[in-house]
Image (cartoon, rainbow, N blue to C red; front, side, top):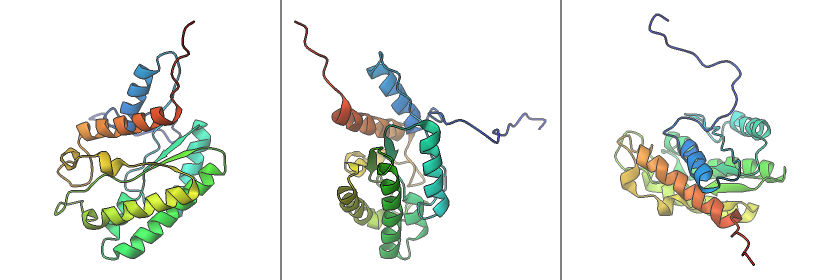
Length: 199
């Protein structure tokens, strides 16, 4: 307390998150691109969270309600994969099933879901334990997204490994910028409309 360490309030409103996070950077990109509109990006990320944990599904539902979301960007599963690296096939199946529940719950509310594949992981690194089977997981996500009507954002295909930091899992700040740009491009491709031609 003497040093002045603060603690978050018990009830907090969703924001775009930390300045280095991709939702914060996406908010900046959206605000700059669509200056005549008010677009809110809300970061409901939770470090260490497992997609398979039933609380995650409930937390997503609460965050959607709190933010009055019009679209959900969902990228989840890295912690599950890294914790279940000794049983990759079972872990992939359980994690994709958990995400399928989240997609189904969200689309049932009339809210479109942009489901992202996970970026690459650096092999032989402290937190890159799923590097060898990440492609299998992402392929399974693609099948599920198609089946459930989610819009796939293939982050993996667009994300260079050199934008993953030393721990092998988390992007560098430039990597978070790249994530924001990937999502911004996907949103624009789906919903951006060209201005009406002047007569």
